[in-house]
Length: 170
Length: 134
Image 1 (cartoon, each protein chain N blue to C red):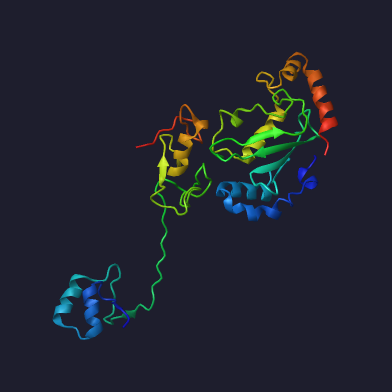
Image 2: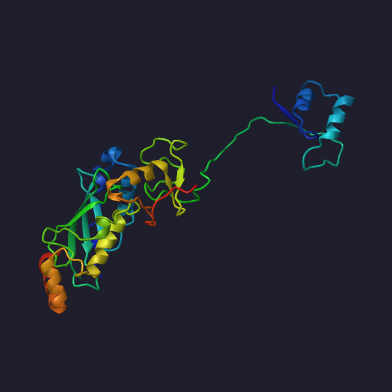
């Protein structure tokens, strides 16, 4: 099993974090500390050096999916209203998935109308990881990919594997 | 002068009298018979005199409704200040919904007013319609 932490040790995040922390809501500070100290398996999230609301995220493709062996880069931004509004998350790595479009935008209900302030960065990233394991072509964002997924799933999975090999290597 | 606690009585006025006068007048004896030391009858006729040198009192407060949980919105303990408060207390008490979920008042009020929670306010934890319990 590919371990993310070995490839992306979350060390640089500590450098300027303390200095910026004073203006941040305590909840964001707590979440960041826990993400760094007790990361989710297969996921790393590090705050940017100059903006503690901006996170560099890496998600390992789940073993049971066509994205296995890939490492996907995402950006996550906590808007001023967070946690009363959802974080903004986008894939930076090209991915062949019916619920993720060309620009990396993700179709996931908890990032939109099903957001709740009881959710957090950790649970959002877990949901995105789960979305990689369970593509849902019935609720597409990338319509052409969803169409392919519905009409010829074997071919779609093959393409997803190819894209993972071509674009999602660390 | 240090205050003294007389083992034979819990009557404060008598304790004060003992500090100035060690002799037992008949009047004081009557008081003692009427109010023996709570719970511990002393077998002997020896009378103890305890001088309390220092008292260190510790207190702890808790919201009655919160239990051991944390606020599901700000993730702070219920007895800690929410993200909008400097200090905890009556300005920001716990609010319990009909679904029995509790939050800091400021946290749930902000969520009810949030555009992402329209048109119907829902409990952040169970998504039931949010209504404050009586």
